[in-house]
Length: 345
Length: 295
Image (cartoon, rainbow over all chains, first blue to last red; front, side):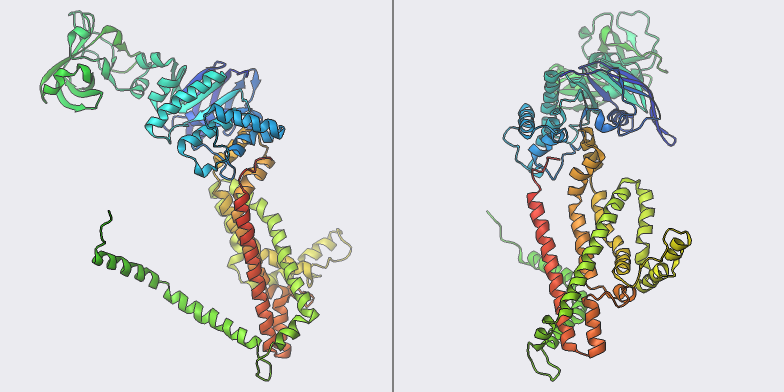
């Protein structure tokens, strides 16, 4: 199956005075797994629906390979879509749902059946082909939706929060399976989610969106460790944005004068974990909470700002004895201290 | 191991259920008084001769009369005709309404419902004004030279059908529109993304999923139109004689309560048969709906 690159060129879409997509440009490589990540209302679903052809942009261009699809009807785009609520046809059984796109293409009945059964086997649903949609569990419906989206060999796949209705364990299994399916088929995939962990786990690259704009696009590790804006930093995980002057260098050199971003789990109670060129933060313990795999400490820095410190339970021997209002110093290694570019103090 | 229920709590539950059931009593009383009793009276009448003796003579007389069977045929023709026109006009209209934005759709829906707010008599005479030989429509047609002669639009089957469709279309539309509005937009989007044209989306997704609404609308049209009286009486001009008109004639001309009662029962049986037919068809369709992919 030949997958295609996608080019999104200065796409704008406004609903009245509300700007859903504000001049969005994005290049997606052929065969890439790209995630659009953002809070609700950030424009990620609008962008996906524009690619699918259900939202008409006010201006801008969408290219599939070399072909301009901006004005192409949805049914001519050859794009597979998995919807948030699966959108399975309730009046057809599993097999009929998966055969549907082939029936539209007037494939021979025996061939259509074979390909539908192959697709169902690929998503591990063999043996359920005669079931009604109402008889399936959420995870099984999800798999039918996947089979139906890949069976007609689309060159691009769009997924709109496909796992949001599943419980946590199932979600993790499906994350792995969707990624495996993508790797097997090599199909260009755009995946929409508001779950940063899901985005980090699954993607080749993540595009973080907020209020109709792409804030940052990068590989998961870079997005996590080196966010370019405060929004990205805070959306991607427990981030401490430290105003200039609050941190001091462990080796006594001049304190950094920029705004720093340090993840909660990069802070340690033990100075030896940070190294001499790391930074230290002094504060008072406000609260502590045990969360199973780790302890979460809330510290009030001397300037009054609160920070979060996440100590792995295995290293948290000292946490148990810490009392409220006690003076605590936490340390972070230099490579985990990220200077936030252009952030306002 | 089950624990024996507390008798006091169980009694509370029973009392609550009885209270809510008792709320239906006033309605049941009125229905019983206004529908069941007259019905029983009609059944009794149908077996009484003019001399006051019980016999099946009325049935023999009515069922052997050609007039009865032609009236039955007219009734069915009118109902079926109304239904066909309602389907032809109503389904595209419901599709249009269901695919417009809700606010616009509500305004359009109010216009569709407008006929229901005016008295059927007023509307029927309104059609008379429009459809007569010298009425607005024929005046426009002959005046503009489109037709040389005025078209026979009223005092016949066509006129009656127009009046009946006008009355029934909103009632047919309501359940069909509701069913279509309930279809998840993502279903039609999914179909389109897989390559379905608009026609294929309508045929393979929208119509099957609104079949329930279309069935309800159709039953409604049939049940209503089978007993229609005013419209054929005014717009039929004496030439369209369904069962309802035969009943009225039998009473007003011959004062034959026995035969009129038999005709009434015939109408009732007809309705019951049609209702059973529709419901059976619906159940069969629901049963066979699986595995119908090939478009």
